[in-house]
Amino acid sequence: MPGFSEQIKGCIFNLDGVMVDTAKYHYTAWRRLANQLGFDFSPQQHEELRGLSRLASLEKILEWGDIYMTEAEKLHWSDVKNNWYVELISNLRPADVLPGVLLFLRQVREAGLKIALSSASRSARQVLRSTQLEAYFDAIIDGYSIRKVKPDPESFLLAAQALGLPPSACLVFEDADLGVQAGVAGGFTVIGIGLPEYLPNAHLVIAGFENLTWNNLLKQLSGAAVI
Ligand code: G1P
Figure 1: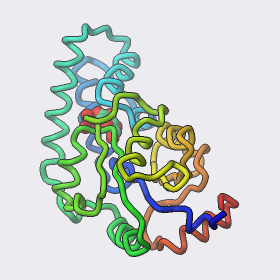
Figure 2: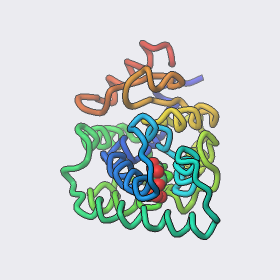
Figure 3: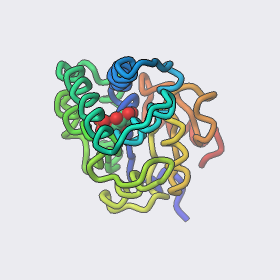
Figure 4: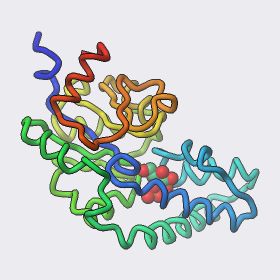
């Protein structure tokens, strides 16, 4: 049986909050919508929306505000939120890619691995284009391809399939606990990005990609007895 580092042939990255700090714009736009409906919600509550689809996010927010909407009203308000969000991300530039991400992607490429994006957002391609990240990806799974909401593993399984790899050959990089749960449920090794207390289900948690090398990550996985 090959060692773990030889077994890993692909990396699957979430986008919002992992590669680009777009989660703050989702929060601003969703909060503006809640405010128009007469209530507010906290950054902690917004954590629960990370990784959810647009409709699932809206339904959660409506629960918090104890508001009933017809399906047509939900469509209308999710469009309104999306227009605000698209306006907020219209000025994204390559400099908005989070520290260390580009260098890490290059190292992953040089190590001969394949790279996929898996994002619940329908704006993922726009974000990749304006930050000039698109060329790094062999496969892109976004909110248009995904049918099942996390913690269902569908989004990562589609990404692995698009790379032609089994889950056991892929690392998943995720900043949301729901996404980590989805990756683990799919049989992936999952690296949480952020604070360990928010990511109790990840195999390993790192603060971000700044100063992270591919070899250093493999060492950390080995130190955490994941490999
Ligand atoms: C959707 C949701 C948002 C969620 C994001 C995850 O984005 O609206 O709440 O955090 O996916 O990446 P959208 O398709 O609306 O861009």
